[in-house]
Length: 218
DNA sequence: TGAATTTGACCTAG
DNA sequence: CTAGGTCAAATTCA
Image 1: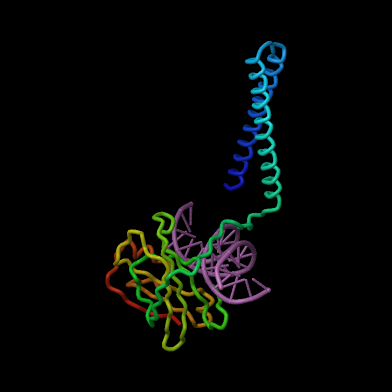
Image 2 (image 1 turned 120 degrees about the vertical axis):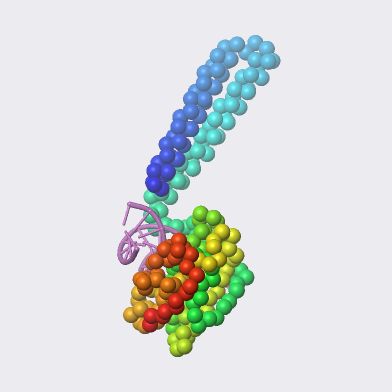
């Protein structure tokens, strides 16, 4: 996908260079014709004008050539894992912090995109973004981190506001990684389901569950 | 088979 | 330079 885009860009660039070369060639031939007929001032002006056109073609071609060289060389260096330039880290934004012993749903659909072990913290921090980040451009994010084992206590930090249109009654669930299950650290919220798997989230979206049955797994 | 999660690599603010 | 926030390939799930 990305490589095909790159190939297309490269081929487009090559076409542009070919066309510019043709233009320069035509201007060169026009200058030769004019060279034979420089009889008065107007012809002299036309002659210098053609010269300017030619130098413009040459300048454009040299710019394109240098870009092509740099892009092709950078392509050799960069790998699939090279994500420089794509990453945008949030500066210190206003945050809403909640501490709760129960991971009660907040009415929004969240999608986990990362988990990080935090220095001097016993439990990992989980990173969530709004499910509708891409389809509706919703910029809401949140972080969930367990801060206490018994009784379970979680710190939920919200960044940004929801701009997506989601039903306020839609349930939301949070679950730590499978490793945490092994470490007896995880918490699972189950919303009126016969299956204790948090991946049933989208089923709840459709069911519009209102009654909530919370259960924790440690 | 598509969507969600996991997780190591990558990137940058401080 | 490091901690921590994000990305995206691999994996899991339904």
